[in-house]
Length: 414
Image (cartoon, rainbow, N blue to C red; front, top):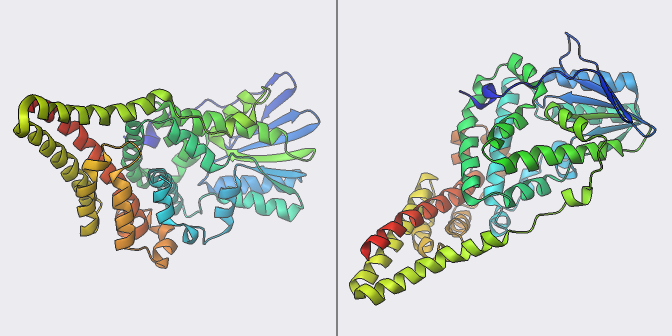
């Protein structure tokens, strides 16, 4: 069953009143997008929930801003995403080698998969992703209203999410995103409108979040808090805030609560236990090899080394082949994996990714076509930029599987 079809719809919000905040639902039979009137101190705020790939949401945003003539329009964007929407050449400025060296290839690949899902839905409905945010900005400028960016920096959000996830959780996330990739073709415009209560992209993330709580916490719950704090302190007396509908219930929940923005903008420190485990496993492998030479002699020790080199190297190479890597990249994966798997600060995928980037250097057209190519499986593999990311991910996955395969075989050799 497609991920989007399994999502439970949240009930419609009813009028209610809590201390300092009055919330009035303006839903009607002709408009399923929730609009809530809020107050904070001396401010009047209209919270507009939208679907990021909905034509009706674009029309709702335009008509609301024109009717309300606010002092400020607050949008669910950070500075980086704002520039992405306004500038078409953002991808062309990306340095893929720098991405690999900074160990962000896995993160970028996950981000591209999320973007690809949303773009495919948008293409099916003949609308540009984020069009309602663009409309909010255009309408604000037409009305002479200020534009206020209310979302947390996307790099902070993704980094906080990534740092709190284990290697296995990251791999599981990528596979779940890939499995959901084809579901976009099965989503109709009517289903998108019904899913306005749960923004399409964030609905998929919420589905994944049931098995990966860090996704739910950092991508949705923390952003709900951040958006609430930024919106209620936006400049002006009258404010229209445009956010994905999936954030509306959370914003209402946190509206009257104290929120520490500084904590939400910080990267959590790496756990001591994870650092210990990173070094403990390689140390255990090395000790096992030494013990094999000591206990069983040259034949047993050499056999254990052969198992280690063969399993990690060959499976890393197979991962590179699955990503359609250059022959030199495959060779580098096989050679690097037995060594990088014994050092927690290195990864076979980083080596293979750099070799692939040098062997098949992305051209300008690869960056220009990136937004289109990520919408299809073939495009993902054909575009040199995304192929490099796939090489990194698949090589690391192969080397990791090789580690689990080699260990029991080495134990048997004793």
